[in-house]
Image (cartoon, rainbow, N blue to C red):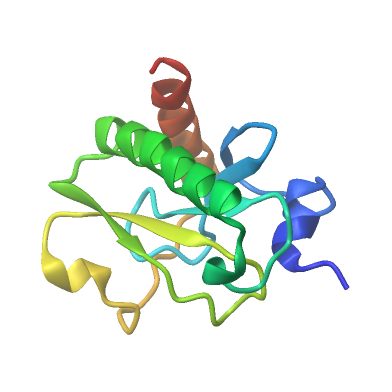
Length: 133
């Protein structure tokens, strides 16, 4: 059965897309810790990050770096943090989280409640920076 991320990649479920290439896809987390919280996934559905073959794993990391650079330019923050947990969806993914204080990277924090218009604006800002790289 396809994961929710595979359904997002296939456009079966809508998302706030940030970037895409032949092998990877990035989109806003709909339950963000901070504005601009983005998920980066390989298009191949593999449950555990470290089960990816080396080429896919290294490509995912390089793609995530490009997305993180765009996030840093688009969203006011000190850094873009990286987190890999992979327990909530059986599809390897990386969280990119803009933050200015360590406590903002805590997944126990309440998630932001952002409206569709704001999510679209955030997505558009990051997309613009990604494409302008």
